[in-house]
Length: 272
Length: 272
Image (cartoon, rainbow over all chains, first blue to last red; front, side, top):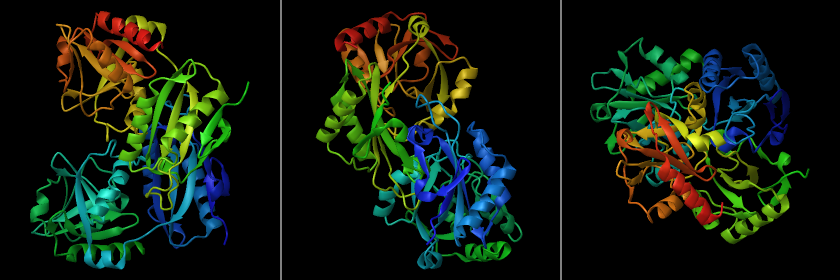
């Protein structure tokens, strides 16, 4: 089997050799951004949207992307050709660079890497997943930073509680899951999703677009207690696409008709 | 000049060769801890306290330190001997390790590195520094994680405002600076410092101990508006020791008698 290639600062190298010096600001101070998109028949899905977000994240974090957009697209296509890896996605990573004083950014390091990823199990698809709530607001939520400290720190608690994922809330408003966006379906079939203090997911935007064709969609602050009266809940993400939620803490959702329908429409619309 | 040595996972290597694979969870998800202590005449200052905190941080983050405390002490002394670097400090870093799925921790990577560091300028020592306030609460504040994302993100704003450092507050209570603890001196000479939602600094603890000998010290929640009536303010940290604050936003402190006295007593007590 061929060794996977990675693009690091201008060169294609074998993945095991893709090393960064320990003075990199991601290692020293958790400072960096990334984006991740999946390939459908070897072509990036929602490519422009992910590139838009990546360059926007870089700008927000005062990091200069060392290649322009045309070059980045070209290099990504080369990487896809070289690796020829089905059912995978590309991660674009940009770090704070090698810092001379351990605090101020250096020249950012750019890494493009290709990864297979896990998708929801058959059981999760059939029954929906269980979410455990946690009060927490991500910093710079609109930027796709590498800050997943809380999410990883919560993993043991999640497991102890038999949950599949975490649902964050802050000041009694629902925000998001660590790596997914969140939606509720109200008793009268309105689809609601938080508007602010979240990462604006790309699958989220596509699902909103599709849902608007058949339902009233409300993108607005969503109070925590709206969960009580909701009849359905689901999450969206690049790797999960759209996944029904069966339970949040003690609240059980018995329906998943609308989310199942939306998943089918999403897959059909984007052939994924 | 001799190349500095770094201890990486069991081996002493030259600093330029101290590389980590890009799948490390610090790089991927900002997950890691560290500690930093200075050397005084080649001996670690407050060594036991820093080691206590390092092992406590590791435990809090569910990370296993790959060496026991005795071995760590031994390796640190070897590093100090090898580098023979005056006016420097040692950083102990522990990462989330190489992750196979980019999210779940692997076997932690341990790095010991030695660094010179900048100390306050003559002007800062004489006149005191200027702080810019920012509303923000660090996540897991009692753990010395590598999460300094907000601090680094704020650097350009700090510079634009002609400030030397940031002072965080949350819900109208003062917390800390990104890399220092904060103290106020009230009109009637009480010394007050926030009790919670902060990193429990080691210099902070030593200064509290010294201050108690001559003053009433209150370790408790400190309201933001207590700044208005305070006559003096100062910060403490490993690299700054104790540094007077001349200004926070619009508020100017004209006095620095107590902080100057405490700094002298600190230096004299610990010969640093």
